Image (cartoon, rainbow, N blue to C red; front, side, top):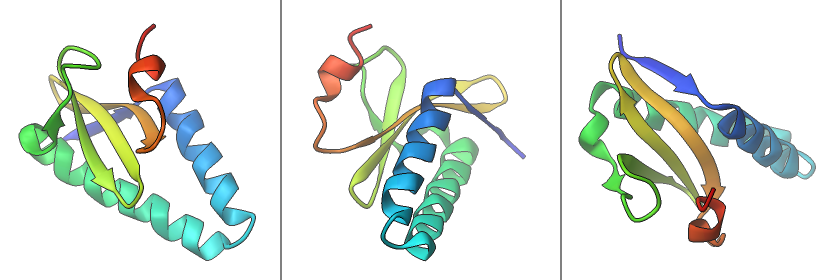
Length: 97
């Protein structure tokens, strides 16, 4: 089974998204995180699955889940989740550093 590593920013993004949604609906927040996990498992098994995002970072790919984008890159034994961001955010600015 392919490994899914999560960067610290990705873990914080996921926690923030869960918290924001859970304020109104904890069940919906849990379901969204489950969807993230399902998509990440697919990406780990087929790293070329997502859209190439070299415009933001070399080797970066993204997969859309609802209004969110899961940004990841291939690593030797799976993928590394880099960020989890709302699709309406200023993505180039967030990837500048």
